[in-house]
Length: 258
Image (cartoon, rainbow, N blue to C red; front, top):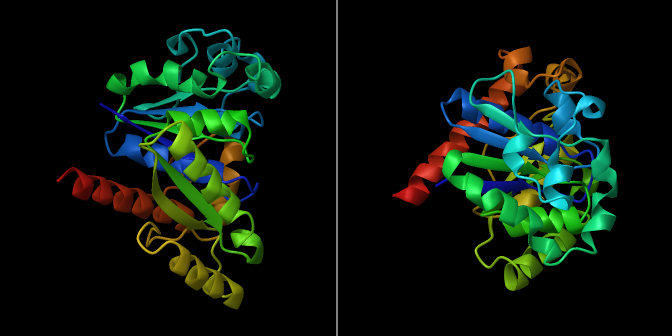
């Protein structure tokens, strides 16, 4: 039985999509069967894997609003073992349309649960907000990974996110856990980055991953080529960091299963 993991942070530009896509890619590289679910109306996961949002006839929108079987929308990516349930331009209206659906917080959960047997990991890229799409993702998930940028404003809104996770756990998904916290865009030359790391270590004592993701040009340009960094430049600093992060993630999974 697979595991569903949401990648969430209501702040934009923190490396959420980059972390979701590249961890999924390295898990596939490690022999895991992985499904990426793009429920961000911006569709950055979809375009970052080389798909055109405007040309997709079936997407996660059809799953959420029309209750279409997700297997109709899932596409194979360039990387063996990595699949995508994409977003297209229709998803922008989904948040409003979900308001009128019965059990609106559980629509995605009902769609994804039958797929757990088919994948080792289902990884959901959430919008940078705490609206109904994100609530659907958290309600669906076994756990959540929180990417946090190593900058001054990183801790702003973090308590709001943790409160939302707590509320979802109380009311909609009592099994939801914080899988881990990933520090992104780290610049070891900046004193503020080191200070932020220390603050976040106080807040997340056990869940903070040891591997931090550095600022890296090759990493940031990979989506414009429609590829995860593993396929764009596997030897760059950012690629090595995500490979190490994925190894740390898998080691934690093995310890949990013991």
